[in-house]
Image 1 (cartoon, rainbow, N blue to C red):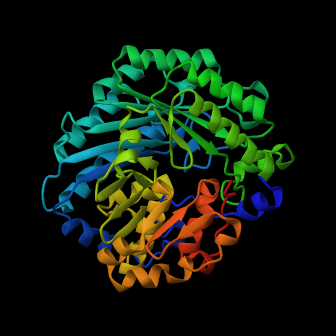
Image 2 (cartoon, helix red, strand yellow):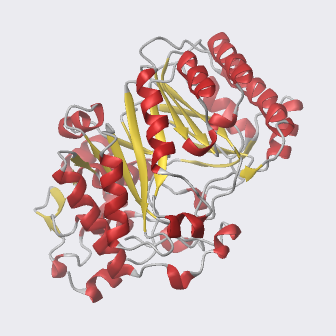
Length: 447
């Protein structure tokens, strides 16, 4: 593809795991708003996101809210607050709620000791209805986990493991401070299967320091040899103005837009050739996997964890920095763990900021999510659901000049991104973002 076209469409835009995106959250939404939203939340599916903001080692590429710890004491203190937050949130819900899915992110959730993990499960069971059909997914760093911890997570109820690979090349691993052998990773995957974990996905990153197309393809080949149920292939987001530790990475070692585009295309071709289905911009799944089935059924969703099979109307965020989504809007917890723990000790919901949704926001969010998941949406269906708010949300974007590049088609009802335009879906979706131009946030490259 033309390098100038790639450069133009690779301008920094959000990843659209929410709309409006997190930089537009504000302190005008606080604890009382969240409490009222919880008290009104009596029906519909509910899921939980639990954030563990600690790691044994800080990876230079990481964009998550986490910090390195050398002692377990801060983790134990944090987990006490986390258990208390679970009980506090449940107290404000009008009914004991059934949970459809739980996702543990970080940081490194596997840093939690088996004893504390058992205690956490007791707290969750005391406050929510978590049945055997609940999907429990856990992010795993294979360099800092052993069989005892994996057994503890199996006993906790883990049904899906998300294993971080990033890249197996030593020169890349050194640059990003992530030494991790294939043998380590393969042993963890094998142990998970022996423990009966039914779904395993591997996370790969392209665009890392010193990485080139051949390195990425070698990493993909090794990853495919482990027969994962899903593969996520993310583009590295270099945002040192947000994550200062990324400043350690020499920008001269990072690929430019054209090379990133070529790496992503080659990586996707290799995964597709192995029999996986493409799911959105960065996921791949075996055809019989639930994510591939939901894509075919038009039921695929996107939330703060990226593409998901979780269709819950309400997502409760638990832990420092975690974000929740309720029908009324978004809430984000305090980021700093000390301040988070202090708020919990004072009996307060630890909300730092949020965003109350209007009907136009909901219409824009629906259009953007459908573009990110299905590469298309129906204006007629959007109007049927949101009325005039759909026109307020979409009119300007529907008439933007995409067609000169052949990346979209619009027949008055169906707005469709063409096959050639799919790599640029984030840039196209950004045209439906009514807040993007109002903020000062800087985002990562769209490629």
